[in-house]
Image (tube, one colour):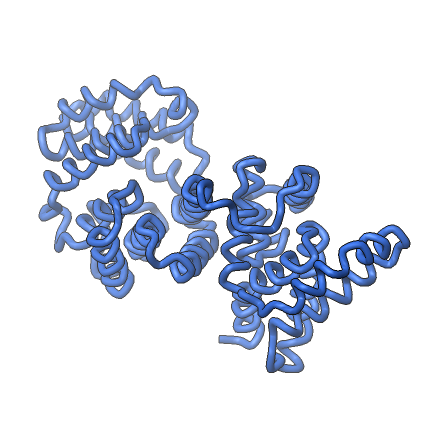
Length: 399
């Protein structure tokens, strides 16, 4: 590993610690976030040449504090600091509780006042330590567009007066669900499109961090297990010809056995000690796929039972769509098609290729090849993923 790569990884770990400590002391998230980004940039340029300092967080805080001082030299800023000097001194005298600060930062970035795209971008910027250019590249938008999105998010926090503090105990459960949803969306962005795998890697890292802060939260453990069990198949998702390989046809010797073992261990720990939630149920389904020696030995009846429970815990068309596949594997493709039609008109699925892709698969299993071919063609036209377009078009051509 090069020194630049090692420093980059270290800075992503340190970014939320530095920002959390600075925001806890000064309370102005937007100014503190800009200052920490300046410090991270300076470190990225200096540390590979000069070496990592003995106390890297303190180094980042010192540089960031200097930036804040430069920004706050106006008379009005001095007056505000003088009015709050007692509060700032008291906060500065406290030890840096980086775990609490990082958790607070996650809650802040995933605040309900922010739109979903803003939550994703701000989490990757403030907690993940990614640059605006990296985030823009990952989401395939111009850097200027992403910069505006992040700026609007920070302005929303500033205008709303959202404090840098953990939400009250009564709100934490609901806010934690938002945090988990944001992390899962980041993971899916990277896992679904193999051209953006860095997002999946970052989501796993952030969820592992959250699990370290909240080890007793069953759904946090469940989400980490789900990510690991799913991401373990990444290397097998592309064939030597660069084409997508469906789960049933993947080479299982290319799956990451260590990740699967860790995911299963986490899942068993969560299922035995906490109320069962949707991430734990999805992780259990992923584990059944991963632990089957071959596709033919997959325990589909158990998967179908888990989807039945999941649909009651978290009812939505995507879950029903996946259950339709499990029904087809247990009761036959016609039964699966019948269930599929109950959600085919769902608004959340109207602009996606998912219904036609699944319908094509089930029609192919039922032997209706002409209808299956048309479904695959429609799905190929609707998906935005080049890899999925190629796979679906080839599937149609093969019929």
